[in-house]
Image 1 (cartoon, rainbow, N blue to C red):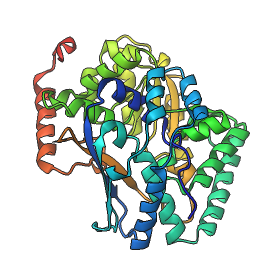
Image 2: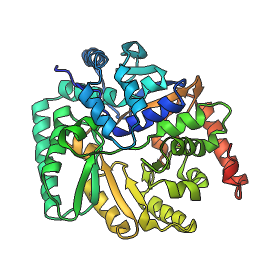
Image 3: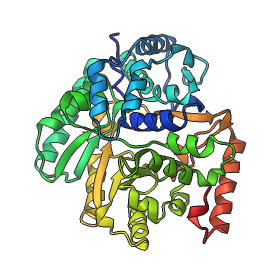
Amino acid sequence: MEQIIKSLLETDAYKFSMGQGIYHNFSGYKTTWAFKCRNENVFFTPEMVEEIKRQIFLFCTLRFTEPELEYLNSIRWIKGSYVDFLRLWQPRYNDFDISTDAPCGLKLETRGTWLNTSMYEIPTLAIINEVYFRMAYDYGKLFDSFIERLETKIAKLKVGEFKIGSFSEFGLRRRLSGEAQELAVKRLKEESFSGSVFAGTSNVYLAKKYNVKPIGTMAHEWIMCVGQGNQRHNPAYSNWFALDAWVKEYGVLNGTALTDTVTTACFLKDFQLTYATLFSGVRHDSGDPFVWGERMLEHYKSLGIDPETKTLLFSDSLNFEKATEIYARFRGRCRVAFGIGTYLANDTCVPPLNIVMKTVKCNSTDVAKLSDDPGKGMCQNGEYVHYLKRCIEWRMSHCENENNSLHV
């Protein structure tokens, strides 16, 4: 099989925005990540696992090129000190532990500095996806069905059957293949749509190649590690520590806050006037999008902020039909945007993989995500999850009128 990841730019944009924050503020943090396949009846054969190992080894031979570094340096929120670090950076194959010792046939963990391990997640998932679909199926037939479905979607966007406003392609981690994702970005860039605008892609390599905007701010790992990786922190205040560190790094730039790491209800306790003003918007990634959207609009209003000046970015398991319904509900009331992943990068005649890599430890302590959808949580220590829930429940029931300036 040809090399799958051929450039270190081939990752999601938020890996660079978080990476810069890690480099400047948390370079000593160490993390452990674990792979999980959520699909039932999916099995990775020993041959697949060997190919995944080989592809990850090839990924670990890559270095950033000067044109790639110049491109990163041209992005407004990336600083020269971080670009200089990336000039020296290279993935370490020794940070990976890969075996067949798992029910799905693939066990994969990474351990090392957060600076390193954060950068492994997206390329690793892209490799696993492509190896699986090329070896488990007739790839040619899958790719043909992908093209047919992509062209049908584009045709419906062109005539206005789907109207979703601004949308971006977010499919790198679960794409069918590199050529499939590239074709999707290329075709979306080429066309004009009625009531919809293609804004960019999370894939920085493709953003550079096709001269579209790289899209992405923060992921759950930022809140989990910043908020829970320091054992002196109360994890119920994870969002406050994470938002505070982000503002110190970026000010008013690059600001879309992720709400559901330790439940949106807890997030709103910390997303008060200062942060709600500084951040340009918020991202939805679990739970009912309509309930969440109404809740966010009411929260902005309660702070005296005009919701029409803020962006609601929806990114949870979207297709164009669902995005059309969400857009119809919220258009004109705020800025609405969508990050659409698997539906654009891996919609074929067979079901896509539902695979993730999540941070499970930071600085030798457990970390966890408690999203608005219980099925999206992941932690290796059930006792820590119970502890985190108790911390959040106590805060929510005892700190109704707390002064957010005292969260130190």
